[in-house]
Image (cartoon, rainbow, N blue to C red; front, side):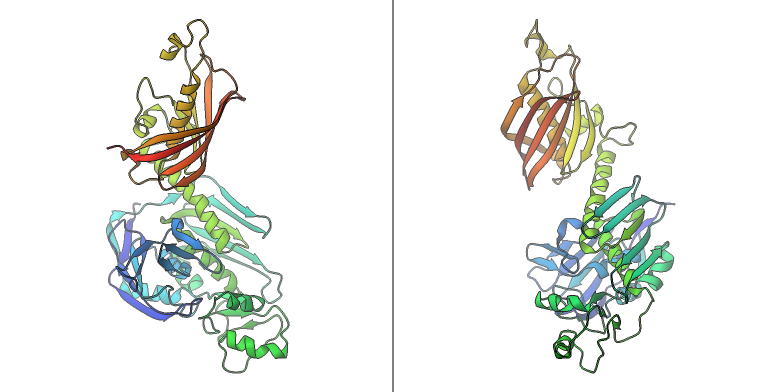
Length: 465
């Protein structure tokens, strides 16, 4: 059944201090038109600039997810994003008068209550989903992180943590229905940290707004009596407190026996919301944190971009390739006799592209190069490589159909093998550097398994008119 996008019915404000900065802030959720997405607005800066809450703007994951663009920076957005995603909201402006949302009680529940108070409103525009069609895997051997994204008709999360601490140990949770379980089973889960981390976080200018009312502290080391005063100051504790090994420090009882792992799942949901599109997938995560979550989102984002590009230029995929000859003509401005790409086999946006050129005896250039010994001119091999490289620049620019790629330089050019009629050239081009409208790529051309040509190409993207 087709689902429509959703926003909120009115503006609503929530106030408090930021977890890491300790800055006081007022945060107002505003309705937004269809197809807007989620934006954070800094009302305290001149002109009230906005920044889109997406993976392209993540600038720091040291102890939370921070987004930024120039002077516009917003710290610790994951709990707000989790609340928005958990209520299946698509279009919301989050206005702040400081650089960090209020932590409130360390969970996403206060934000859920505020958004529900504003009311969920259906909009007259269909919701787009990213449907995962093949398994995606992300691992970090050093930290023991494993995340697998499976195809699924619904969004689901299963999460495992297994810290070497008896108070925490191994914990597991699963969310099989975001609609039925998010608000009651995951939104209330509060942030946590180990006592051994507190001093380092404090020295690094973090947890300035943290206290036992908005965070769970897990005692994972013995505490000398001489330390208690300093630790109480860092944790903003005024009364007596016992630092007993393998216990929890919190002003209230745990909300769930496995509250820490539920909060990990909450953080994952908030980071996944930076995709900018809701998922239909089952995420199985073990020992993941913000750094791994962000890398996973980047990996999923590439799949989404590939789907978007293919849908735009190719339509329905009908074979084991990305673009056929007709789709290529919608992308590149070249035409006969100078279109030298027949098919794009693989495409990793901003990273890598693989394409082929079928070389036939009917090519015009064989009439003069050379009549009795036909060889494809090296300059045309480079041109075909450059055209395939041009496809790699898709989605790096706004309105790519209005752009042209001018190649500005060639380096390290080597011809290894002559290319003759009947050969099929397979080009593999990788992005080395991309900065706004300037890029550098490395390309190789193969005939079968034999390297025929290699080069590095520099290019600039310009307007067609």
